[in-house]
Image (cartoon, rainbow, N blue to C red; front, side):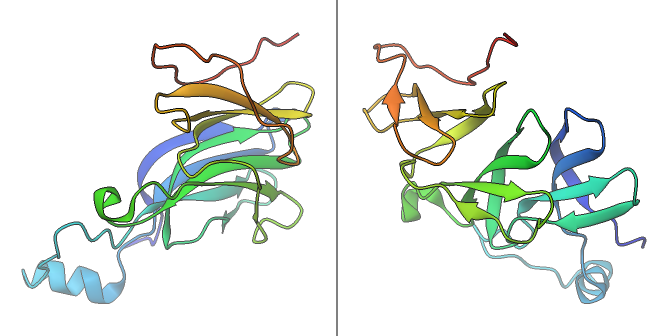
Length: 178
């Protein structure tokens, strides 16, 4: 086996075209491959042993770097306009009915990709992240009001405000280029 990532769930190309953020699972280990071939690969229900996480691929350096923890499932990613930062939403693995919502919004600096920092102010129901074109704000979806609404906050996590606040379910925020 090549050891490449598997189960790709999505990708985002950086605005400068130098990076590819990939949401994918780790490959099976040699022990897991052996167990599968021997049909000795029983799994525990609701156990996710290879969650999708975020990887950065550099087209220039032909390198693949994991940036989110393998203990968390990545669900959304968005590049800053200058391609220096990537916002990602992750959650712990396991049955969410048992855990309750525990999503985290993190920002990864491409210069130091293994040091993602959690953004304060985002409720544990945050999802569907989108970075503003000017890099000053991040939009995300949350159920903090009991229904899915779109919120905007400053890139540092301050100034969280609901911009949809209506009885309909809102999802997948996007910004106009201007």
